[in-house]
Length: 84
Image 1: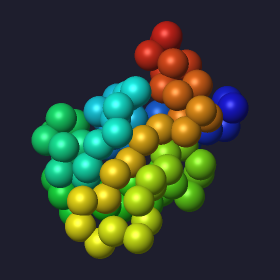
Image 2: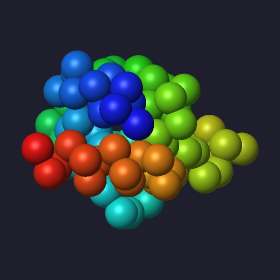
Image 3: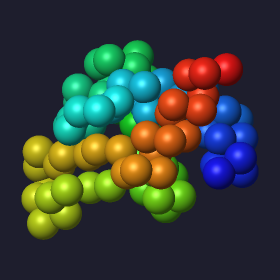
Image 4: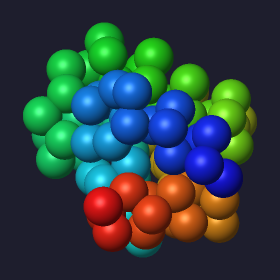
């Protein structure tokens, strides 16, 4: 868990994206708007967070209107980050 927290804290984009998603289900455009991260950075950040098991894509068959949410691990990392 500590390694994942450190991984997220190394990038302000990762921290902002996790905070933007929170307990909700959101599309990349909503995440970009709430986190103030440009769309081209959002795609890369979402991919990185998925690869580390912190977020999940709930409708992978969709090309448009993809929906993301935090995994249980992602929620624990976010709680840990917000405690600091």
